[in-house]
Length: 192
Image (cartoon, rainbow, N blue to C red):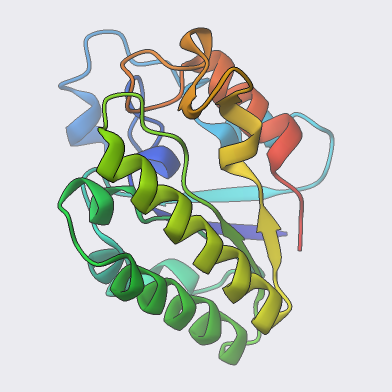
């Protein structure tokens, strides 16, 4: 089964991986385990993950790549939104983009799952509030469209500080560590 993973740097595997070989040349010690997909495939299911993550992209930019990413796929995983928050873009606009990607995937006849937004350790109170608001909207989109919601935020949130990832689950405060990616692949990912 071909699973197209469409998203930003979280999908790409930052900070230690990128699906683009040219980008990977700039990573000092690339490690393919820095992808939640790498861990998900080890669960024994017959899955072929196609990583279409691009660092720094907002949801409108991710949406523009959907057709190419979905070509030949059986399943579409939609992930994005943190760069909208980082760039102070309206979370309602980001949610509309995410809803549009989900609906587009469904129109293409794909099984679709939608991931919520991770905590951002390097963000401020405004960003934390926006992530909570966006995740509320993401949850509503999943419910309204009857697609699977992948609980990325809850999986890596520090129980003591829920607006942050646990320190050992992030390398840089922006992205999951290898251990964080492992948890996303083993605990948060499920097939729709």
